[in-house]
Length: 475
Image 1: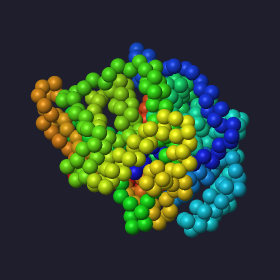
Image 2 (image 1 turned 180 degrees about the vertical axis):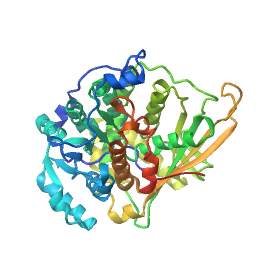
Image 3 (image 1 turned 90 degrees about the horizontal axis):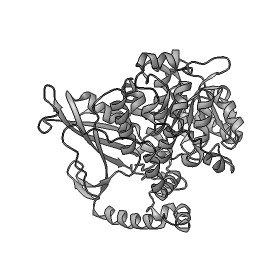
Image 4 (image 1 turned 30 degrees about the vertical axis):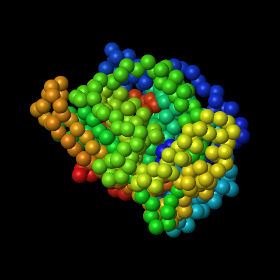
């Protein structure tokens, strides 16, 4: 289970923190990117559309930036594994970062893992660094889509987004950091729309299973779906499991800056989404879930904020009925609760102070009871792990009036898949990229900074994910 997703820091120089803090302030609202008086067809005609095909000057469909980071290495393997699914059965791709030796090692590792020795001669290596804008621009100009695997994104993600927008390159990341995701929407949505560039965040385990799962559940319901609760469980295999400490770092910084996230959201000036049907009831901080047959807590990751942004887009831009959403995660039995309470109290106390944050980052295994580690999971641990999302939806069946009475219909769906952080995340990220390349006509009418649900609601991404082990079904 990942609460926040973060993915190693290949492609990062010591100068990067200063670069990433220099934000371009454009205070532009997501829902105001195009005047409401302009029709969708006119929007399409009135804006440029960045290319979805390669050319002599833009030779790569995909460039994986941060390819030698902990998660990046597995994204490289997944791209190599699915290259035949590229446009016309051919995917042209390269890896990028700041250390050629490390990148060569990752390509060699992928060649061995997949028994594809040809990768060592076929995959090009680009040198780029978030602290060097010129190198980023040179990389972006050669790619149709950049897969950004550098994190924590709050420090290293923005220069990549900025360069992609400026150079007409689409960008996909696997951030689970709401502050980064929403600040990119605030600061770059209109520029991306003008350039016809799609910037799509949270395309890993955070938050494709949840965001696309909500849309899948809505689409399977015969009528008007009004609310969904999701319940996540993650299972380790016989070898046990853990999460790379980059995710832990993102959680530390995210909670330390929670006040900044609240002030950021005020800048959008959003009105509350309309509530259709009965207002969803929020469950307690800790409760026994009959659905999971174990104790559960509210999900602390990015899923709720990502799903809400998707529902806002679908309501305000496509005039679709919004779905209320509550997210929870199973934590097991009584012994786990004691660990959770102790770790939680320590975490929330220490994260308030710089010395406490330093302690948390220095000793992730101690403060998380081994849940996070600096080494990350082994391949054997990954092979035995899995996740399950159960979605419980309710709404009004066909022919019923949502403005009258309580919801009269229910639906249960399941999204399940392999280990979340380093198997499911690369699958989700790469399938998101392949969907963009192969189904560009089904994306939103204009470019912009979008959620996965907003980007892929009208595509076949569910079918693509089903074929690769992230499976959607109605129970």
